[in-house]
Image 1 (cartoon, rainbow, N blue to C red):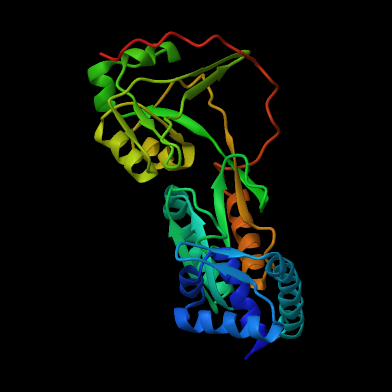
Image 2: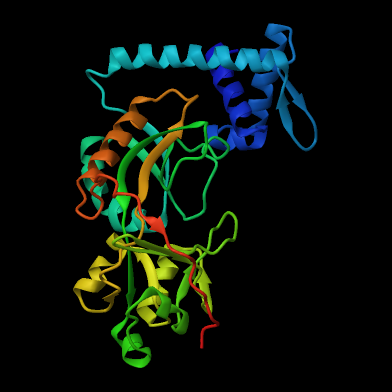
Length: 321
């Protein structure tokens, strides 16, 4: 039995919560994973995992051994990288997850530069607006928008996302142009809902010392940024979306900016990775590269926070006509 390989397999089984998912992440047969765990338990003369037909859980001894394995494997990788870093570039499979619009509009067009720098990295880029569990799904790092709520992750802020309100010229010719957020209640608006909770996000507007946050009635709600953009360009209604996504359509006249004097709350953009994982060379260089990419993007420059404003009373919303 290769003890280091068995340790790596054990750590992956614990992280993934099962043999099948661990085998998929390691690209090994499930039988090999099971055999290595059994051999490890035999060699240690201790039970590391409790197995049932529905789940795998770690024993008390297994939990203590898991923490030791993490440190040992981290030290081994540090030793390997300290020797090889001067003559070899980072290599291997790297699994990254990013929101659909960020991936298609910013990350993928910049990947020729990444592969020119790191030709030995094999990148698997998951593109989805669905929030994922990095550890359970075996993802090395992810680009996420919003404040970090998962204490098991380490986050590095790389930019901000600004939001603007837009509609097509055809829509505005038919329904008119709102001059105040309160007038949106009389318009057709397209909403966005959370893939995780199903909650439709409120719209927010700030002007001077006045801040308005309100739900907007609408006939259509989507949970994918590409679908949201498509709905806007089709003329189905007014949208509030990230500036970087809509900027090309504003430039070519397919969309027009609304409520220009009002601003919407920006949200932070971060690259995150599990804190109990060794930050390998391939993850480290990707984190540095993605931070460089976003901090230099003209629509995502980080800036000082605006002064606090007093929230206004919610506006009454009437059913859309």
